[in-house]
Image 1: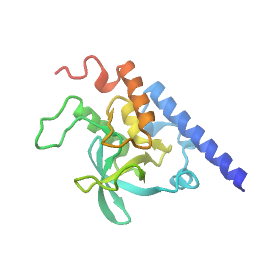
Image 2 (image 1 turned 90 degrees about the horizontal axis):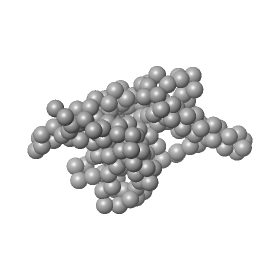
Image 3 (image 1 turned 180 degrees about the vertical axis):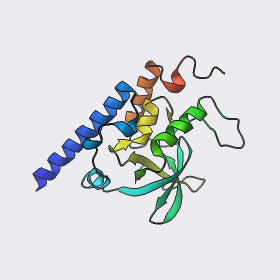
Length: 191
């Protein structure tokens, strides 16, 4: 039984990696990626990451903040390890590429089932009482922070303490910069 579970974990990891790689190479919409290979939410979580909590996205505030429904309660979530240009901060103007980052986040997250992963290196909540979590799309088991950075909609952001996926995110940012994707494009902020 343990061998079967290990094989299942390995295969799911390979499938998730292939799906993300395909999406990054082709630029296709994440929602259209080979649905037959996409694990169900239960399969994506069982045995892989027991520290993940299922939630339903009810609102995407901007690229790095969302509101979710967890066990019937609404919670604001701040995605760990990323920062997207501001679009809703009343103290600031809308920042360069903020609308695009927000639109992409809405496209991939709106009304989706996600898994929220805590990180023992970070606080449970930030100074605004938002939950601090890594966010995973249930479809395809995709790390949302990594996806936003890889596509050029966010930059890697370390707040005080290194976090679980910091090196992965930093590498994704370097690759997005080299490929001049999204906010790294030469003409990203030309009005």
